[in-house]
Length: 270
Ligand code: MF3
Ligand code: CO
Ligand code: CO
Image (tube, rainbow, N blue to C red; front, side, top):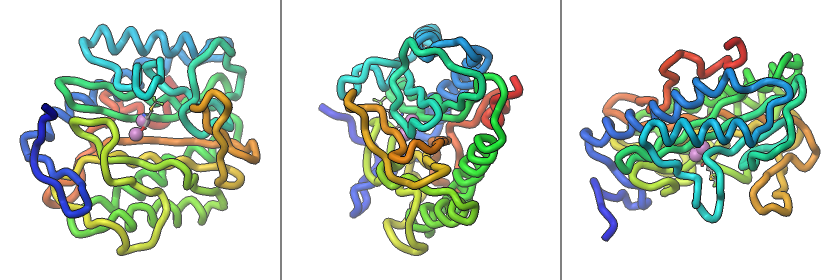
């Protein structure tokens, strides 16, 4: 029997209990610590398969479980999305080149709680255009997080992100979204990274979800490669993404996936 906690809203969004925040903090902190620790392993000549192998080991050493290994047939502990890959990049033997930018996305399960986070890295020297893209994407995530409080709506979050990104003449990916999580990996609602103020479900204390905007330097359209996972920009433009898992509190937000080492952004000075 599946375990049920809290209650569901009329939109099917689970409202967790105050005491459930602790489990989310523990899971989120582990995912974030793994992203801290992997930074020194990102350099030109390194393969993304080796980075994933190290992440798999870190999850195991922590006594945790990878949420992605075995998820819908996915076989890796991370998604590693290089340059024009938008998300769900599969780790492989191809080596990183100087100036490549990459998102590493890790989801772990600790005591049944899911912690899901991603951030950007660079191999070698960061190209100027990529630096701008990464900065805008990071700041757009925080524009979204700033809207998280009871009474605001999911449309407020999406609108804040979209307005910020488009003011910088970049585009928000529509084909992928954030999601509720908690005792499960992907649950209602779909957290869109675009939208109109005041639309969508109202935020309530006890909701747990991710915000994970993908931003392209060019057009927003994506396509999925023949491997059925790798999503790339149709126009081959560079893409970036940051992701946090958050919980709605009585008066705002708690971020479950804050970097223990204060290295969420930039990662590329370590
Ligand atoms: N961590 C991703 C997310 O943010 C999901 C990856 S599913 C996988 O929702 F199977 F591709 F790993
Ligand atoms: Co996610
Ligand atoms: Co993720």
